Amino acid sequence: MAKWINISTSTHQLKLFDGNKLIKTYPIAVGKILTPSPSGTYTIINKQRNPGGPFGVLWMGLSKPHYGIHGTNNPASIGKNVSHGCIRMYNHDVLDLSSRVSIGTSVVIHK
Image 1 (cartoon, one colour):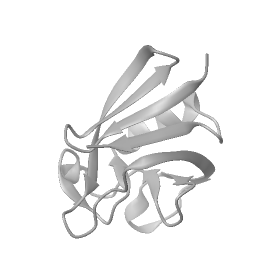
Image 2 (cartoon, rainbow, N blue to C red):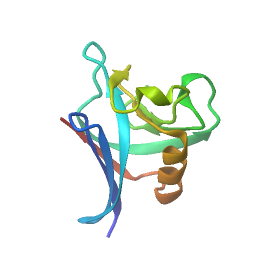
Image 3 (tube, helix red, strand yellow):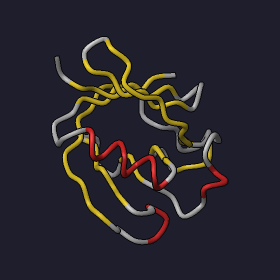
Image 4 (cartoon, helix red, strand yellow):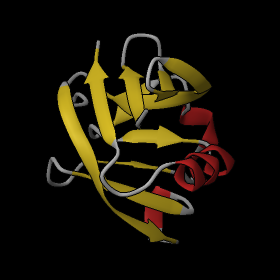
């Protein structure tokens, strides 16, 4: 079975699955009304440690250009619609998730 990520923008949850078995659920922040997170199926195409700025300790780029799953320098934003479309996670959570998934992992984003 392959690991994949299911992101719900309405419940502010990122769920990691192995096939149809839920491995872990993480709280997230998502895009705001003017810059919503893009619905669709993408893949993780790169990982970058310590990207700087608002991206926290880790950036995982998606196959949709300019979008990714990343940490944050503003942990109070988790659980809200505040980003420019990216998926924000607590820094410790994005490190944990990154250690569990590889480049090529499928990411499904939906309401």
